[in-house]
Length: 491
Image: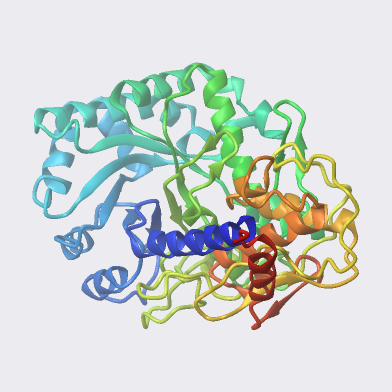
């Protein structure tokens, strides 16, 4: 029976989602900055990290105490060279060899060093001399690793800011700044030849600061929004993170390097700032980081890189109280020096679900649907659209159902949004088990509830511009019983 199959499919989807969360999440990393005078000892930090689903840590240097503390934890470690070391690394192969001898060989493989980043955002530093030295420095470090028989085990790269792109909107037009095209091509050829990633620092927070509108905020925080249509690919983007990462993908493709892996070396949102700063707040930081983690866990990927999650290093593990600049620069930490959470984004083992995040989205405009399942021949919604055809049972007995009186246009907007966030909307496509009844209300009810279940039953995920509500009564039981009686085979 169709209805029973639909309910079973949702139960299975929820079960598989739980299994996914219980497994390792190698795509979640975190930045461990040290511009502070109040940080806990490395040994305490190592224990903290082991209590979370964080599997990779990025250091901006190569602090031996931290590298030692992470030994035998299985946590991947990214170490870095300072910008000030780049000239010597570029000029002297012996200096590069000594750097590897001092910062890698004493600790590897007990300490799982996986990547060395040479400098940070050098290509947008404005220092032409330093920019030309990045590639020779990377090559000398690579040769030193090869000499130590570690060339295939530890990669070498550098980290870029989004400013390396001359254009990023729409994502399909992504292109590198032509003023350093030759230098960038050399770096990309190195990445390709060695199999190392292209590391980038996308910050939707900065995009919001430059356009502080409600719809931009919702777009940056992975909340319901009108989306942004890319006419170059006919893709409707529903969040800024995907748009920024795909702009980088498009730029790499345009340069002839479609196979280079992208790693997000930094991304985050400050939880407080100065009075004149737009955007920092606990609510926004929790929404961005929590929804980003949920997005990564969905494994939906980005529109141009579907089906996998880009390795992403959250910024940051702790606040760095000695950093200069506005107050927000010192307020990115997910954890406090006493090892408690600044706010909960579901990283602790055992929970691994994203807690409730308040959602105050902008109203969607006329929805476009290039990316979501089509709903052919959509008849009028049933008289009582609040009763969904295919709600999903959940372990804590809550379901997300539409409210009464919702228009078909709003149902379509909800459908577009939910399916655009990576849930499996295949069953409500033509030929799917849950395609009938073929109404936008029924399809939206399926998608809205599945989105809620896959968002770790975050109450904020059952808002949909106040067109949905939570219920503790399983609305599928009566429907299943009715279809059982109607479709029972004759004796």
